[in-house]
Length: 83
Image 1 (tube, rainbow, N blue to C red):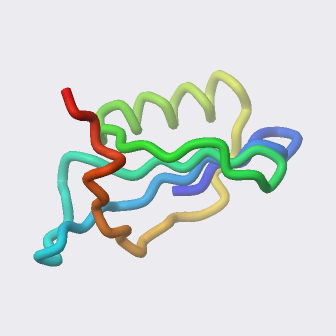
Image 2: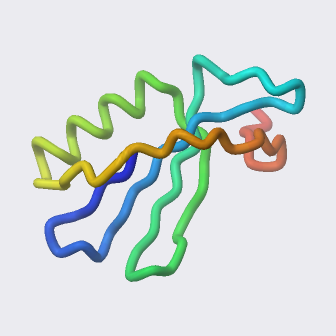
Protein backbone atom coordinates (compact mmCIF):
# COMPACT_ATOMS: atom_id res chain seq x y z
CA UNK A 1 0.00 0.00 0.00
CA UNK A 2 1.22 3.53 -0.73
CA UNK A 3 0.06 6.52 1.32
CA UNK A 4 0.65 10.19 0.44
CA UNK A 5 0.38 13.10 2.86
CA UNK A 6 -1.89 16.05 2.03
CA UNK A 7 1.00 18.10 0.64
CA UNK A 8 2.54 14.99 -1.03
CA UNK A 9 5.91 15.55 0.69
CA UNK A 10 5.62 12.39 2.81
CA UNK A 11 5.11 8.95 1.29
CA UNK A 12 4.71 5.75 3.31
CA UNK A 13 4.96 2.43 1.48
CA UNK A 14 4.10 -1.01 2.85
CA UNK A 15 5.45 -4.06 1.01
CA UNK A 16 4.81 -7.77 1.56
CA UNK A 17 7.84 -9.80 2.67
CA UNK A 18 9.11 -13.03 1.17
CA UNK A 19 11.76 -15.29 2.66
CA UNK A 20 14.64 -16.96 0.81
CA UNK A 21 12.49 -20.08 0.30
CA UNK A 22 9.95 -17.87 -1.57
CA UNK A 23 7.24 -18.09 1.10
CA UNK A 24 5.32 -14.89 1.77
CA UNK A 25 5.05 -13.74 5.39
CA UNK A 26 1.56 -13.49 6.80
CA UNK A 27 2.78 -11.58 9.89
CA UNK A 28 5.12 -8.78 8.82
CA UNK A 29 5.44 -6.09 6.17
CA UNK A 30 8.26 -3.78 5.12
CA UNK A 31 7.54 -0.11 5.85
CA UNK A 32 9.47 2.53 3.87
CA UNK A 33 9.11 6.23 4.74
CA UNK A 34 10.14 8.83 2.16
CA UNK A 35 10.18 12.61 2.68
CA UNK A 36 10.70 14.95 -0.28
CA UNK A 37 11.93 12.05 -2.43
CA UNK A 38 14.60 11.18 0.17
CA UNK A 39 14.23 7.80 1.85
CA UNK A 40 14.13 8.33 5.61
CA UNK A 41 13.68 4.84 7.05
CA UNK A 42 13.01 1.18 6.40
CA UNK A 43 11.75 -1.22 9.02
CA UNK A 44 9.60 -4.27 9.51
CA UNK A 45 6.16 -3.83 11.02
CA UNK A 46 3.49 -6.33 12.02
CA UNK A 47 0.35 -6.43 9.91
CA UNK A 48 -1.70 -5.45 12.97
CA UNK A 49 0.45 -2.35 13.52
CA UNK A 50 0.34 -1.58 9.79
CA UNK A 51 -3.47 -1.54 9.75
CA UNK A 52 -3.54 0.72 12.82
CA UNK A 53 -1.00 3.10 11.26
CA UNK A 54 -2.93 3.23 7.98
CA UNK A 55 -6.15 4.10 9.84
CA UNK A 56 -4.33 6.79 11.86
CA UNK A 57 -2.73 8.37 8.81
CA UNK A 58 -5.82 8.22 6.55
CA UNK A 59 -8.50 9.18 9.08
CA UNK A 60 -6.40 11.23 11.48
CA UNK A 61 -3.96 13.08 9.22
CA UNK A 62 -5.70 13.11 5.84
CA UNK A 63 -3.30 10.84 3.95
CA UNK A 64 -4.60 9.35 0.71
CA UNK A 65 -4.17 5.81 -0.56
CA UNK A 66 -2.37 6.05 -3.91
CA UNK A 67 -1.86 2.40 -4.74
CA UNK A 68 -0.92 -1.05 -3.59
CA UNK A 69 2.58 -2.52 -3.55
CA UNK A 70 2.18 -6.17 -4.47
CA UNK A 71 5.77 -7.12 -5.31
CA UNK A 72 7.18 -8.96 -2.28
CA UNK A 73 10.52 -7.72 -0.98
CA UNK A 74 13.19 -10.20 0.10
CA UNK A 75 13.51 -10.43 3.89
CA UNK A 76 16.79 -8.94 5.13
CA UNK A 77 17.75 -10.15 8.59
CA UNK A 78 19.98 -7.09 9.01
CA UNK A 79 16.81 -4.96 9.25
CA UNK A 80 15.18 -7.29 11.78
CA UNK A 81 15.22 -6.46 15.47
CA UNK A 82 17.78 -8.44 17.45
CA UNK A 83 15.50 -8.55 20.49
